[in-house]
Length: 319
Ligand SMILES: Nc1ncnc2c1ncn2[C@@H]1O[C@H](COP(=O)(O)OP(=O)(O)OP(=O)(O)O)[C@@H](O)[C@H]1O
Ligand SMILES: [Mg+2]
Image 1 (cartoon, rainbow, N blue to C red):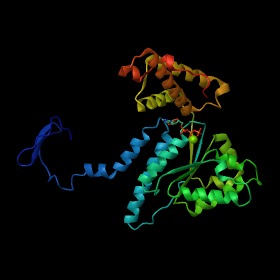
Image 2 (cartoon, protein in one colour):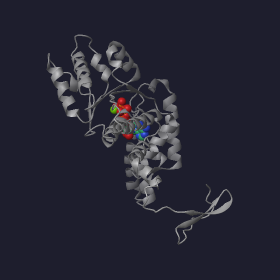
Image 3 (cartoon, rainbow, N blue to C red):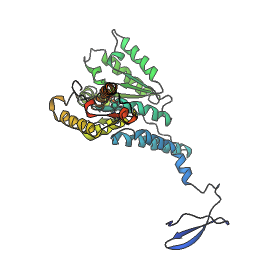
Image 4 (tube, protein in one colour):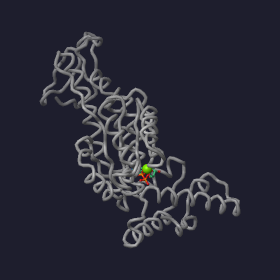
């Protein structure tokens, strides 16, 4: 149906519309009627809309965004299945994040906590971020105790283990093995009470999994966090800036782009390059330099207070 003019309501509850080139009168249903469904559909999925809004704050990450929407759909459909007396499905949501530094692993884990809380998958949605030293103890039994304690704190939320591959560092005799065994036991026993995320560099995580073949099948969701392209890094930089009510001058953006192009193409820095964090560090430094420049020049107008200029961008020392 094509409406080629604004809808006009007649006193008798009819509207004039043009249907396939012909003027017609349509009777309007009682506006309180449940027949008018679009609003209902929208509000039913307002949670999904909110989730999409939260995901849209992140640059790229299409795979992760798709996965979150699939989980939402799965939970929703499961409720409908239960209403029809069908078996409710239960799936563990433990995950593995593989990627270089600064590719957004911690950011995504924190966001997932909030989204899973919204979807009623988790009761609290908090994130406990730990590394080897937090899990591994100094004597027999100490590691299991430390690990259990952290799992307890993570109940209702996410336990995020950064550089998880380091747990396999010392081989069979190392206490890291005890931490892995304790984690495996609890991730099965309490699989719907918390989400375990193991994170680390791709290569090291693959090696870690090859040493612990039983682990792979226990993580149904494996996500790659690729390095950002220069354009994505510029997008991330602009988002960080506008969040803080700053902006780049045109020349400053060009200078940053040039620098990122050169640093990403130089092979010696590729392994150490820390993606989003690198950009964040540059921005924070540039804000301090800008403050100093403004203080000296005494130009306190709003435009100047917001603008990072090319001379404020200083690149050395950052990785
Ligand atoms: N896709 C993205 N969109 C917007 N900002 C991002 C994105 N990815 C990363 N960032 C920003 O980059 C910075 C680093 O991200 P984060 O700490 O999540 O990386 P990480 O993968 O956990 O790094 P590491 O492995 O070193 O711990 C954060 O300030 C984050 O806000
Ligand atoms: Mg991190």
